[in-house]
Length: 160
Image (spheres, rainbow, N blue to C red):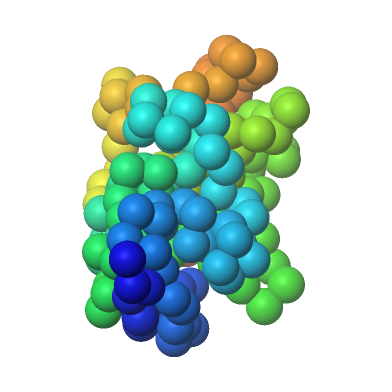
């Protein structure tokens, strides 16, 4: 099997890498590009630890082949903070103690960002529904939901 040359944009930067036909996007990000924030929790798309945004759509990177990233725009947890400043969601996760062991946190943050990109004023029910694909054994989700709702309010106010 021959490797495939893939060009994409990751966190705003053009990247190139070689990929075996069966390599997942998650493995390409972690092993090929050194972006280790996304985690492999299940390898079957059930836990959300590997969540990334591809062309504006939330996806599990463990379920997408690296070759499918050709020409795509990918956002990972490493791209959330800008110029040394945390993204408002990251700041609110800290303020609300919405993380414990941290394994699921990158996926939750990326999923929350995708939610707020699509819907800047979600209800609590919409937030819970959107984050349902991200499993966490530590937080109980209430602090996560409060952090997302608080960040949404701050982001709306900043836009006004």
